[in-house]
Length: 400
Ligand code: NDP
Image 1: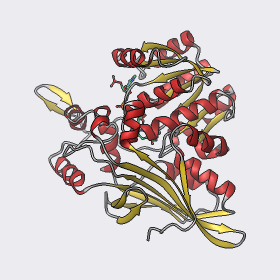
Image 2: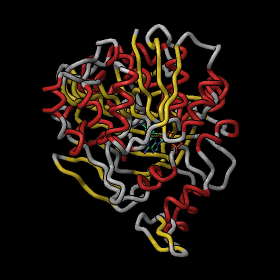
Image 3: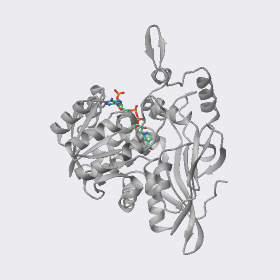
Image 4: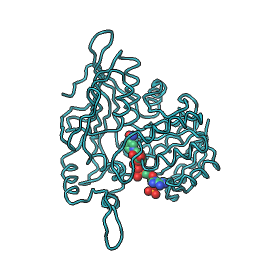
């Protein structure tokens, strides 16, 4: 039994909060704190009467360490679950250090003015977290998150050495809009309009955005075009999978999404460089976010399934082996259960599980760790229990 402070109240947080409330045995009390308190109050209202978990709400600007410290000192949580934006990671880690409170997030830090996400800023906290005796669990969503847990599980139970890893993220869902993003549009567009890259033989190989395309036939979804992207878990998995030769990440995109994105890029709407508009500085991408559908509103209209997983190739007892671990999630089933589509669901469930394992001590070790550095077994069990059951194949079709 413990207390969790959840920061942010958007698409992912809403699912994590529903899941904490289903799991009252672990989450005795939660505090939902975000920039816009009315969203926290509305969610509390919706959940009250359905759960034994006590719910508080608070207003906080997570860019300000002093506000965070005051909130943590008042609520005294066992863990802080950061479900705001990647820009807030470091301020929230600073507040956790100051108050000696465990920290969990789902996305690595990204400075607001350069679309470059790397772990170096958060890894720089390792010694301070170790000395304070607190745990930081980085990347407890689906990707990063479950993909790291799958990797740790494959290494522990299926392989002596993993040589090749392909992470495949397929969203076969259709929301009926010509263009919308499934999670925060600003973060999503920054990610997909950046150069791609993969890890091979000890170094990064950079590609142009969407340069490498493959077609894959996904269980539960069917054939989809997928494109190689840079993705944050490649950086930590390259260090944590000894002997790894190559790690690639592919995500599916439809033609309509890519055509709209190309057009928006061509006219400058995806730029993160501030411009002057009628005497006021605005960032084009932030303005675009304001006119696009709110990802949280896609739930009722999205039909279809996601299929996200990892294909491993390597050696077991001197023999070549391949192995595929994946989850299939249905947008409408998620909506019926928690009022959100599957992208928020597949991130929010692992966020709750990570917070639970850190809070109850199963995954506590002082320092800053990526998710694959913990024992995967309790997390794999929890995925089956809390709505993201996994499937395995020992003879998957490989990506060329
Ligand atoms: P949303 O935009 O829906 O929600 C973000 C929330 O953070 C909003 O409630 C927002 O408040 C709040 N927030 C933003 N800035 C501040 C601030 N300064 N202080 C306090 N609260 C703030 O995003 P998502 O729910 O889609 O994504 C949340 C996180 O999950 C992101 O970091 C994203 O990168 C990550 N993610 C990870 C995935 C994974 O698999 N690992 C997949 C998908 C997302 P307000 O309501 O006022 O705007």
